[in-house]
Image (cartoon, rainbow, N blue to C red):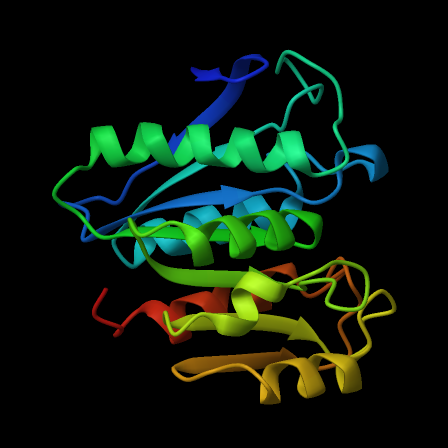
Length: 205
């Protein structure tokens, strides 16, 4: 475990690194902490490992008040500050590499909105972004590369909502849909990892 310096105190984190020299660095955020999301959430864990396999150094951390991270849940605003602190750490550790922002569910909202506005961030990854539940106004204007993974049977963000949202986004963008998968990708976690490898394995950051 790593202890990051966060705006509300120490943030518990883990760093996954590729076998060889990394070609990019990503901060990966977990789902809603009040509904059980942590840096150990299965999809987040598998996503980090998949990204490391295709050359990304991946920092996943617990939002304030989750696990050993200091502070208390702040409804999104504080969590965005936590994400910025994690970006600061990766920008320092991997100053020569492209910086990416990614996340799952609530964490996707945090990562995509912060990443869209941060000039250091080169690319964005959203896994099951809850586009019906949160304001994605910064992302809607962003011309950064955007990659999405969505479950066909997502009960939080129905696929038709995702397609409508995706259709209105500026290029470049790409969306992978996992057949029969719900919001948490129960029984389909490894397919999310495979989709990430397919989307980003040959992409030049």
